[in-house]
Length: 205
Image (cartoon, rainbow, N blue to C red):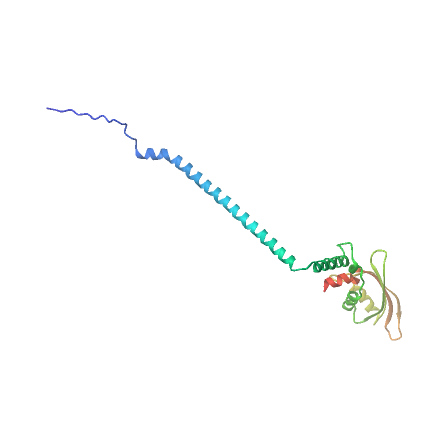
């Protein structure tokens, strides 16, 4: 006797395992990206908050230090320092406006310049100066040279390449030959005011 059997499943069999996982992957990726962005936002916000707190604390500390420094000076000292600063500012003068120091004349820089540039065969004496109409300082001197060639060499010394050209319109005049062979002369030139400025000499020092 033959017995026939049949099997009818009550539920639909699930498809291949791989197909189920493939359908869930896009949802998991989006969730992962969302979590990463959320954590990044949280970390950024926290960093800004910490920086803001540190900045506020730093400002508060600076204010406290300033108050302590102010208390260490009595009002009389602060007033004296303020007056001293006003006097120094008036003496120095604003840029390009001049002050007491910038208008003060000193011969030290000019004499140092002459010492550096005068040849051993030349001797100057009798320096006089006046303010010119062009803003330069007109200087005049008398001098004595060993010979005529020394005068020519001295004139070239003031205009040689690379040298600081403090003199312009240089003139050697009234050349006279002395019995001993030397030559006397008069010298005149326009000098840069910086060469006679007390303010500039302080800056160099």
